Length: 124
Image (cartoon, rainbow, N blue to C red; front, side):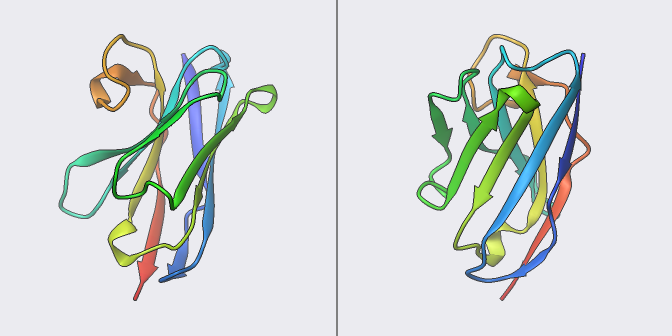
């Protein structure tokens, strides 16, 4: 089981940039795809983006394509979410997760070992 801890969330303003980190401990996650999801107040948790185990490929939801970048440092068991040009609609709790099940890379059911989340608030 991989334990994940997200950090970096805070209050920012529209147009700002922010980088979230997700550090894994315990069993290494270097052999697994990782993803970021987010949950806005009163809404379902949604897929944001994912990265393959080697970091070679990334996938993003349309709403963040071109603004967000996922990267990973397997040597340090860390995955990053670089967020640029932030908008109020990006306000959410952001979670990272490890892909442990077969299935779509964008589906929550494919992921396990969720972190506790980190709050990002974008003010207008």
